[in-house]
Image (cartoon, rainbow, N blue to C red):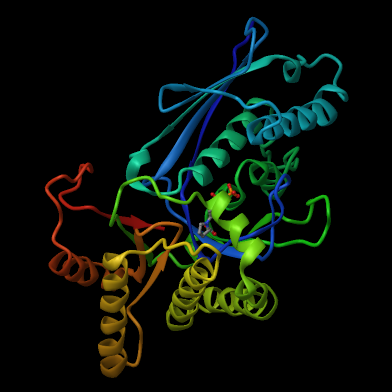
Length: 361
Ligand code: 2P0
């Protein structure tokens, strides 16, 4: 009897144009398009093994070795149901001799190679790795030179999106857009690759862990409150993000760091303004976050005066940790300056000497 098992990894992605707000909470359809950079597989990633076996009496999930409850009708169940449907309709119904593994229960085990307490989003890499491992187990994503995959990466991004919105972007490497879409059923709200990593290989992401505690307001409940209460969000959705998406895609295509940096910093700041415009207000950044903004703004001011160009772009997600995008030639200088102004703590849980990941995208 063959063993039906597959293991795949998916990296973390860091958004430059932020996803914040859903127009459909069940299908996880966003209120605006977003764009991110997927970090390299060598750095922060989730690795998931999925196994189907007729002897399994129920489907089970382990996260970092701890068994998790699978909520009936929840996000995980919706992802699994969609993958089973694809396997059944596209493979098993067409090939009667193929084992009907979509009818078997699954055991799924997922690990993050970064501390879950780091305050770094693990749902994006987690649901992307879960989707791709089950897709591999079901034979949905294998490419051959002559035949296209049974399900394309963009189609699989629709499944990952049902688990966590930002997860759809982690199915691609490089520079990735998640298109807002207009359909009520969500089939056009998918991820596409704007450019592969090799297009702009000198782009680096420095991850500065300011606080590794779990955040106070979860993204899911925070963005729901923003949709319900923020007038600024409506301006952002209609008047700001569509133009920004076009402009940042052009900046990426042209490898224009100055434009990329200006748009990335402006969008991070508007996302946090929208969080503040929520009732009651949500504060994700702290004083250290704001000092990092001041430092990067000052570095850019000096660099602009000296060379006419910017050197770095900060961005902050739903927490106080900073990600600084910079090009390879400036990585050493930026790390030295950050470490000089923000001495590293003795309670550092990371293997590195300081709480800073020099992550290549
Ligand atoms: C992003 N964030 O674009 C934005 C920026 C946080 C700030 O995607 O409810 O964990 O699972 O769809 O994907 C966080 O949202 O939320 C997020 P759900 P998710 O990366």
